[in-house]
Length: 370
Image (tube, rainbow, N blue to C red):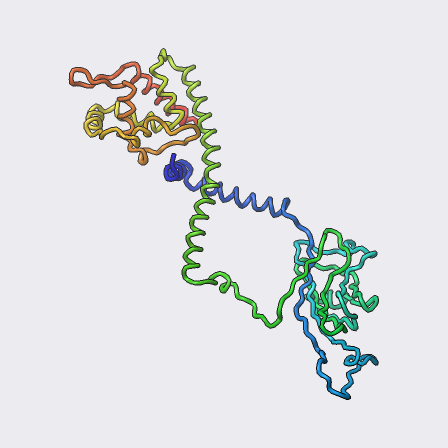
């Protein structure tokens, strides 16, 4: 069965109930994943907001002296640098007080130079501004006091570093927090403007947008097919199993002595559903309609053959408006010798006709009881 036939089958048999089931399945699966399976851990990220050299004396200016705490920076060939860092919990859960390891407190160091001063600049809430403290244990390591850091909350600090000219200090996060294997370090320029959401959505030229549109369209089709196909397959398996049970039930209760030539009827029903039977019954109940259908019958081709041979295991009901009911039914009657041409007139096999009519009545009864 092709994709179009599968979609038609689904639309006619399940209609909006299938769509609702699929949406419930997708949303339910997403909810279960978000609640139970998604990795919900804290994540600490150090973002370098700015890294600026505030004093870099390279020219010989004679008697110029630049002192810091009694140190002549010029003569010692040193430079001063200010680094602003934003520390954010980018994970899905909070970092609690008990998560910190006191033996390795949360802090930072630089690859070269001396930390002269560290200052807290801002925080995302009042609690952090009031309770967070940052101190220097020595000239190399800055340490934060433990605080509760909720998801997406942050604080920002400024570090003043004295370092040798020609060397750039590199920040290195330190410490241990339960649930966090590593601290992430990123850089962002305070001079770069943030790109808007719509800029990101429509970035690129016309051809890029065309390629995106085509890719998204076919991607959506593949996604829908990947979701629908298993539903159709599983539903078809259950439907076919149910039809097999109905055929077994009919064999037990019928008074007709079934013959081998009746077997096509049951196989066709298991493959294609009650529409196959109804198409034949409608023709057999109206001789005029049967003769017209035979006279109008086109040359048999592959497409027509598929209508009465069945479409395989796992299929569902094929609506009459899709399978051209009259052609479908008359080809079935002809192929299985339910009607035969004798002496320029059409004669029916009374036994098979009786079986078809009886089986159709049986199906109507069980459908009425469902």
